[in-house]
Length: 180
Image (cartoon, rainbow, N blue to C red; front, side):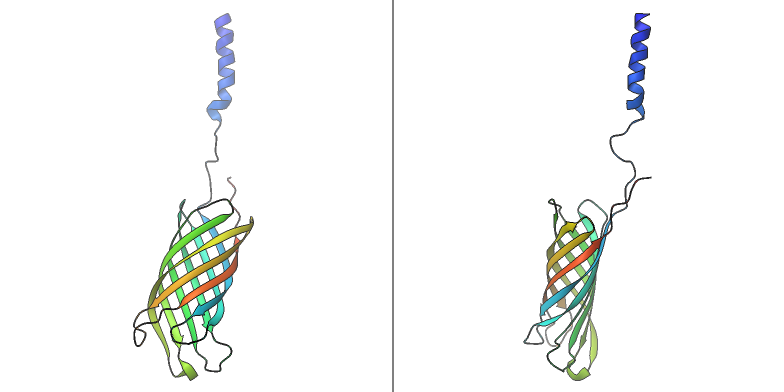
């Protein structure tokens, strides 16, 4: 009788542990944010700084790896020359998480469109580059960003174009999915 009571007590205590789990089995597919920013650039073509805006979206699908797409539109509003640089980029990114801070580095490939003075020509060039920055979580759904970017436009006369940009922006961070 004593052995039967001990066996019954053991089984009663272990049933909950047998069906329990320490972590959720379901989780979201990745981490998505969509944002925009203000960009200041130093261009090889113009002596003065050019300014504009950018849009970006990043999707982190692994613990430290993700992908990002970017768009930049830059011009000099002080002159009437109608010169602008427009770039479309896609690439991979590597990041780390330190509390609210998420420093990252990314490499990309893309297409750059340059409108020459007085609309003499509007030509597109292949380009590649690298960037580094930090996303800071200021709210569970809002991140702010500071980023430095280097671009290399291929075949731009005479020796290529190499703009360097600083972008300051904010993004909506989609909240984590809830397990079902």
